[in-house]
Image 1: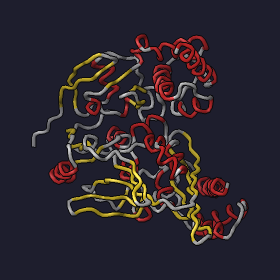
Image 2: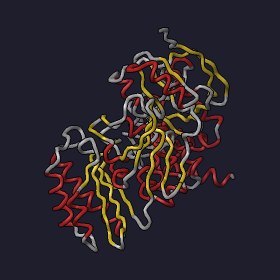
Image 3: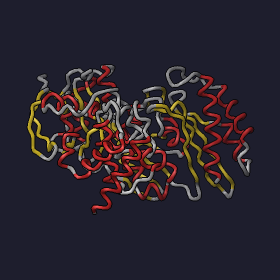
Image 4: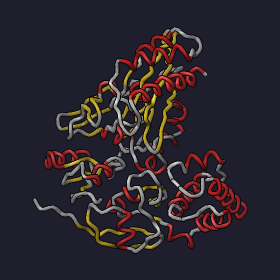
Length: 281
Length: 162
């Protein structure tokens, strides 16, 4: 189906984009890669009269390392992250995740920032960004604020981002000696479940962050799995499966086309083992 | 407030400068098929899953079913109709025929366009790289093996020439 009629705007600066957002109030959406937006517009679950294209704004396509933090600009696509020698060097686990988002067309057009703004519940980046303790930078009429990814999502398609705030960049701290890995189960384009494991080294001891994604609409920390792994020297599959099952018992997992609640909880346990094993190799 | 919903755009379409009038909401696939009568690009899933509508924008594969035509104004767009004028696509097309890498043919235009982008990126792709790159191009006839063989053959043909 065609989208409802709208007017397409291509402001040349962030200020102009925010001015347009202020002018159209509830009648606009920001647009970058369009891979999520077009699905909603065509299904007419989004019916805005104005689409504000951000792609003509300079300075938002950069990936850079600054003071131990990786900065990913708002217009950087998944494929650009996957292909970035810098990301491959400092965060190979995240480069690999990006290289497996959806398919080559979505990776080529879709941006990481767009993915986080749309907050589709079945998505790869949120759990890994939460495990890495990344932040998103939001710019609005009231100024700039940084929000930890761990507190950014509120549920499916819901985040703390205001409609007229625009995400300028994603900032990921690079921890010396850390390992990261993401494992998922997918059919068609989107994950039924995904688990990101990060093994940090703090004071010569392992400090794990294991987060599940695509199951509740927001990244979920697997507390028991993290605590268990902190004290293990090698992967103990049975113990991790058991800890993950206990963590998942407290979660209300979405049912639907991506699988039953029981199936997806089981996937999380299996993927916790696989992602942890990858970090220990 | 007056809403401007129509505009004239130019595209560098298959090597030629082309102009057409579109609505802002028009999808690239509809502009290609209806305005330019380039019907080689196929609509199938309409949700960026199947790859039948794959075209290249500035050399990158995109789903034309989920790309706004206005967003391509001034850009290079390449479709399956350029196959005869494009050395890589010609070689891929010939390899698909040689290996019988199609049956009904509905996925083939998108498949060949995607393979063109792959061979631009990797001149000697491995079987695993081909599978990974074409993961989002769905074929319900061939079982994929012949497609993979055709891509390897096309890459070899092109490498022997250069």
